[in-house]
Length: 431
Length: 145
Image (cartoon, rainbow over all chains, first blue to last red; front, side, top):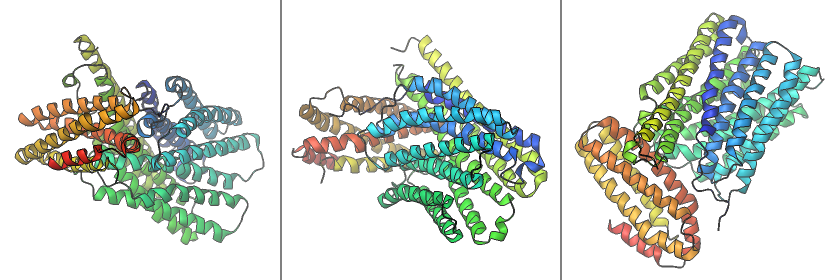
């Protein structure tokens, strides 16, 4: 009937964990880099430090975590079969790590050789990931707006990486292409076309599920993704059309659409049936409030260009988007996925369920909320440091400690998984 | 109306009961929590048995698929019953950590299970069993509970 329908095929636990365990340490590197560089790092988005920081978070933390989550999410949520997930993850994840390090080092030290090496490596690894994921997403017989959002997101990732590779080669070889315009388009596709589209698709599925909210209204899920895609295409046309009024209209429309997602999610959370709060709902709330802050300040910069004349305006927006929105949402998600996966895989050993510790035994609740509090403090310090350079080192240190705590929490969960597994085996309770 | 619509509605009803039981116990109101949890246990059991005794056999007969999605769903029903037994014990001993942890685990398991049913299995059942009287029996049993 549905031969390709995967009903219960979560990948081996090592597939998502390989990505999740590495991701926070890129954030630690970002914090250390900032603490080490100090004052001047955040004066503009074009400093070598700012470019390196952005990519430590974007392709180090975010992309690693999102790839791991996508491997887990596709079979469970949209019934897709990812081709040989273990093999793809075993090869792709270390290559992705290497590509990220090469790119960051190339940007930080302005080394054309490293940028030239990073670009094809990204095309290869992310290209391979896009291919297997796209195959799974287009072959599944499932339907629904989460699936469509994921299909659009994976296309967004492909566009982002192709543009990124082009930019890296252009910098390395000194090609004469419009770098600033292309970088803006690359950024929009990465943040909105890939990351936000994926976040929206995942939200349609997990927000009602984790917090017992009403579902996102059908009109919203039907229009949000396609409109976002359309606006990104229009945004990309600025390469050909140099009309400031057109650019302004597109940028304001993008902000309005993005705020609709944040407003809708916050409203659903506010009216949820489940009253118990946890790290995941807090992470999502911080992310959505950051989106609203991004939209308000972004609109302010667009409407009052004298404000945006200061190059630090773009850095302010970058901190809100990367640290405020995506680091928060991803952290919240990992704090739910990892304890559940521990439980799921432990109970599959075949022991009586009473021998399997419940989800709350996997990462202490206080450790998760404490880490999220520190993360909020780090974001606040980063935002302040944009205007008060004296705070930069402190903000970097807070960011590094916060990510290290996250890494420690996740590693602790994996350690507990191992020890519970050993206990179950030692007690002879498994099949 | 689809034959599985009553099951779909009943999922929402169980969600409400879950949220009430969890909130009461988290607030230390064990008496109210106990009542809500007992109601949840009862309703989920009715839901599971309605599927296991009416819907799944009809689907299996109509499609010849006995080891497919219905088998996975039966396995998840077993897991949820086990988890609820743990939660019942935690409730009896007023162990809020154990109850909260069980509730957290049950919620994800239950929601993921419901999504698979609502998005995949129920539409398949509506397709192959649309003309049968299974829907009437399902509605009758769930309404009586």
